[in-house]
Length: 139
Image (cartoon, rainbow, N blue to C red; front, side):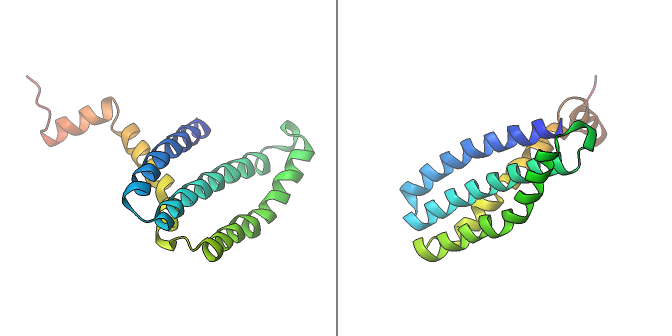
């Protein structure tokens, strides 16, 4: 269930991030738009790497092949220098906006937060809240 929520949220992040990028490309400068797009890309990549790591490291030994556990440990040690080294390289060579990269990197967290709020307010929880606060009145 949790993997499904993360996968759905990351797909939605990619779609909304591409839409925001197209708007930023028209209204803002090029380094701002590309910084936002690369921030979204690196954040989604980071989420999927963390999902891969947690699934393969914390799964019982009987249910997973040892090669996947070894691959997960290797990718855990390579994730930080490669992923964040690439971000530093892009910032220094292509003069991207660090602020827009930071906004793009935190964009999936906003999508996950809105998805969690939507699921919390879905169905009976919203009705109970409305009745308790007086927003929804029963006859």
